[in-house]
Length: 161
Image (cartoon, rainbow, N blue to C red):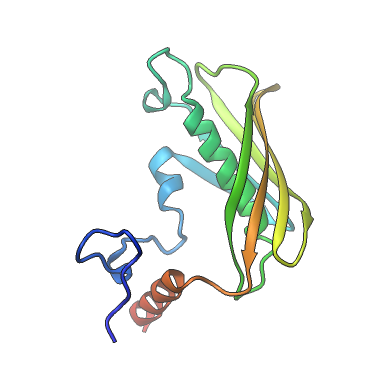
């Protein structure tokens, strides 16, 4: 049976063709986010601010901070999942508190409450002692991985044989 196409995908798109790294951190690598820890409902990471992260005003683009927070908060939820569960962001609220012009962003996500299908999460991003952004969010938890992830898992299993 041929792989199913992702809804809305370009003609010829196949999940098996995705160049997903073994650790699944393709987007994090793209923005330069380095994961530090992931366990027990917590996740930490850091980002060295570089020129490509700035907006036209010369400060860190808000989307970079939102992505950093989404990643560590999602990672915190992932650290609570059983082997077959999967999760995705339902809602992410980011408050930008200070501008960032340089430096290293340290971020942390924490699961505040995890139910069977919903997780409530908080996150923060700091540059040194300055809190530059904070966030709250809700993640949905599926009892099993979506079909696309199952196809990627099978592809990885074939490669490891």
